[in-house]
Amino acid sequence: MSFSLDGHVALVTGSTTGLGKITAQHLATAGAKIVVNYANNKERAARAFDELQATGGQSMLVQADVTSEQDVDRMFSLIESEFGPVDIIVANATPDQPLRPIEEYDWEFYQSMINFFIKSPYLLARRALPAMKKKKWGRFINITSEVYHTSVAPFSGYVAAKGGQIGWSRSMASELAPYGITVNMVSPGWIPVERHEKDSREDKDQYLATIPMRRWGTPKDVAAAVLYYASEEASFVTGQTLCVNGGRSPW
Image (cartoon, rainbow, N blue to C red; front, side, top):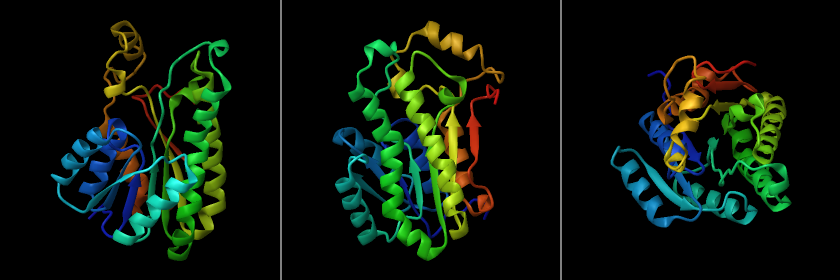
């Protein structure tokens, strides 16, 4: 079966809503054991987990702040005791992302962006790598964003941290290639999910007009890209970015 993930354990961070939720479901249908992760909203997490379980397969729900070394270590210990070592990691967790002039940001906000998009992938990798290297197989898929390539403003903190995440991913791809471990990026455009419900119709219409395919992307579009990178079919692909933005990519 093409794109089968049978026998693999996949951790999708921030996976009880939005892109992460659908990605977790998609990887589950391919046969992976799925770890659903959330930080704070227990009620929402329970609903998402019930929805995932209804699709069948093996899954577990773990609360953890993926920017905390202690929480990441605890989460991995729980996963390993129930499913075994994690060999697919989708770094998707994200905080709020307000667009503001640089004068209205403070360093605390910038630091939160760095924590989610650089520190968290680093913590996840450091914890997972011993088992991946022993197995000589692993997949890191970092959810980045077109905002870095398109220099979106006023969005300096988020864009800067996404640029750091992209640089980290490229370096890690070179470092880990000899071990059969790939590191790739999925770069979505603006794909409306729950947190975009209050965005204005004017903003949405303006963005939609710039998409050559003349339709909105969906979480399933992103999930399909993640599945490809996670699969054996992508075993000779690393350090790459797959843009899921309907042809907006000018780079």
